[in-house]
Structures are given as C-alpha cells and as structure tokens.
Amino acid sequence: MAGLSTIGFDADDTLWQNETFFRLTEQRFAELLSGHGAHEVISAKLLAAERRNLGFYGFGVKGFTLSMIETAVEVTNGQVPGAVIAEILGFGRQMLQNPVETLPHARETLAALAGQYRILLITKGDLFDQERKLAQSGLGDYFSAVEIVSDKTPETYRRIFTRHGDGPERALMVGNSLKSDVVPAIRAGSWGVHVPHELTWVLEHEEAPEADPRFRRIPDLGALPGLLSQIA
Image (cartoon, rainbow, N blue to C red; front, side):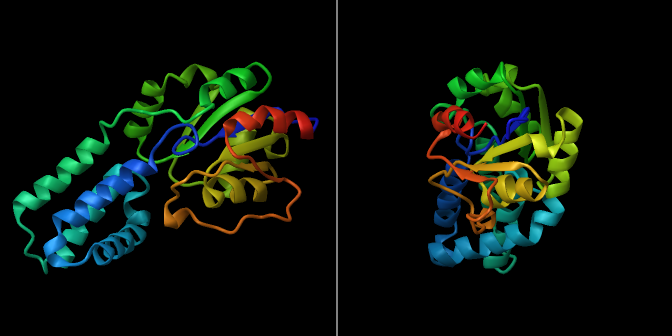
C-alpha cells in the first residue's frame, strides 16, 4: 500500500445524491399508473424493463425514461394515452434538471487528497448528464482525469488506472456500489473502499468481499484520509 498513487472516485451517490431522484420519480410514475396496478406491481414491472434494457440503453436517466414508457405500454395493454407518455417524458426532463447536492465531506476530502494523489472521477451513465452534474458540483478542479464509461468491469479499471496512473496495483477505488465500484476494482488488482449510501439500486447489490485483504468499508467520505493514513 506504500506505493498507492491513484485514487478513483465514483460520482453518483458517492460524491452527490442520485438514487433519491430515481426513487421519487418511480413513486410519481406508480401513482400516474395506479389505475392499472398496485405500486409494487408497477415498480416490479419497471425494474424488469430496466433489467432488460440495460444492454440497449445503458445506465442513466434516458434509459430509465424509456423503461418507464415501455412499462406504461405494457400495463395498459398498448392503450396508454399520449398525455401519459408526455407526462413520463416530463419526469425524465425534470430529472435531468435536478440540482446537484454534494454528499457530506465530499469537497473537503477531495481537497485534502488532491495534493497527495492523482484523483480520478470514474462514473457510468449518460455522458451529457454526468458532465452537467460534475460542472454543477464545483468539484471538477480536484480531478486529474474524468472517465465516463458504459459499465464498470475489472478491465475498465485496469485500463483507466494504467492510462492515468501507475497501474491497478497502485490504485484505490472509492464508491457506494459493491457491484460496480468495489468488487471489479479489487478483481483488477486495486483496493476497494465501500462508502454505503442509504439508497442503492437493487441491480447494484452484491455480496461484500469481507475476506479480501484489499477491501475496506468506511461510514462516510470524511473517514477516507484517516483510513489512508492507517494502511499506507
């Protein structure tokens, strides 16, 4: 660990709020279609559509909006009114305009570490939306590089930490998702630090690699500098 030179940060629900807006929109969507099924039924069909569509639309608001439209068509047996489609599109536009709310300790932690390590932002999702959120967050100056990727796999981390750092073995990844941020980074040869968020999308759930010596968990980003001083 003495050779650690690069730290990657996830963005959504690690540096700023994101899942909250998806869950609020899902609630509005279920209420909009309440005449065609109970909330839990509508939500289950929406999740199934999201799962089917990830390989086509990727992650982010636009794919979520298309999955809502698909679900509306399904639960109404193809009879969904144009006004309902228009309202769903409005939900998506609203999500793309939500203000960026940084999470506790994000700014001070990045400021503390930026002079000691190469700091990278590694996020997946829609390119325009992620660029918008980064610009509005005011955190952009702390990063040596920004990578917006379609998915996060071990190969993704090997490529990024080699391109912008000294390889995965001298890198550490920080994020709220075990499936996307922690486990694949560890499999790539890096360290993985889990920062749990109160809301995590069900498709991002995975078992924590508790027995792996390169796995750590901290309660919030404010604990990261202390963790680094302990294991460096």
